[in-house]
Length: 466
Image 1 (cartoon, helix red, strand yellow):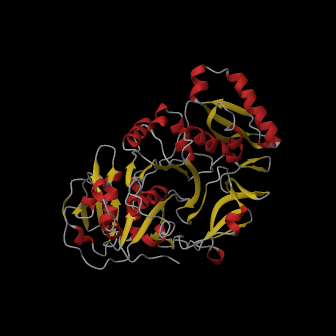
Image 2 (cartoon, helix red, strand yellow):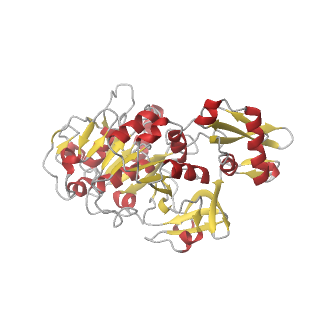
């Protein structure tokens, strides 16, 4: 059931104390929360958007954040547009979500906004706001996620479903400073944004074009205490000397399978921090967090799920039902989200070994080797254990006999790369590690050393075969 919230985001933020010392930090500017709750980023035109379906399409995360705070409880629907949405997909989103107004911080002359009756500028230069419009409406939040046809899927939430994992569990902590590698216009980043806002904490936002070292420098300069990203974000961060610029108390990973190697390396780099990994998805919401320092999760997570969250494994796939689950997809002909009994099939394959479950990979990402399935993530988890490996990507290579073979692209860590490690010997060591750990058909037929691996805009490794 879709959860609603009796207060708007702005109302809940305004109830926090000490806001004049709490900031949203962008790449080249910052805005105090004390100003956000009293001033307008929309040129004082907020009331024009009362009850309407509004597309937030900004180049800058900071202006997107200002618009989200100002419009929750005002707009009938907020359509949160990720920065990499192709312009050719915008008309589809407008039609599917019934958008009739656009909020933007850029030049709109080259975009097609047919169907939108209003285009309202959003700026970091705040102006006096209009008087409070009164009782907030229950704003629908629409998040975009990848679709199988190339067009995005539009996922329906409310502030209530988005914050259910936070409400009642988050005490005001103004001394915390959050930071995130994620973009807040996607589910993972939005969760961090909401935690910061509802906790009255400052937040350091990243930028897609910003080098990792620059973000870490900024985060360290303002004293980030809590920081989140995907495992791939963190593997890249640990390759940078700037990783030492931050001294977090809490490090959180989500969005990809977390292997033991990245947990151990984060523990070594940040011995003072709690290292946690969480499972969440745009559709299923936040399911659970694991903080015991081990990959996978205890079987007790399923057996003792709390907070209205129900978890089960059916046909090897993790399924979730909770108040955090989205209501469904939006648009003509869109499928209903809940599956059998209201459980969302996440598509993540898990295997139980003893008292613990381990993630094998995505159900739609397997490599077929002679009729036998290979999950790339399982092989990567083994390769990443090698002390000189920073990260790896396992992919298929066509083979006339088996249909496909497994090959691996490997990035060495900074020490190995700087030392000019002997590549042939390293290849042999990595392959031997795989032979000792994996069945024969899962062992890579070849190991290639590369300087970097591409990440998608959501911080996950690009898997072109999936």
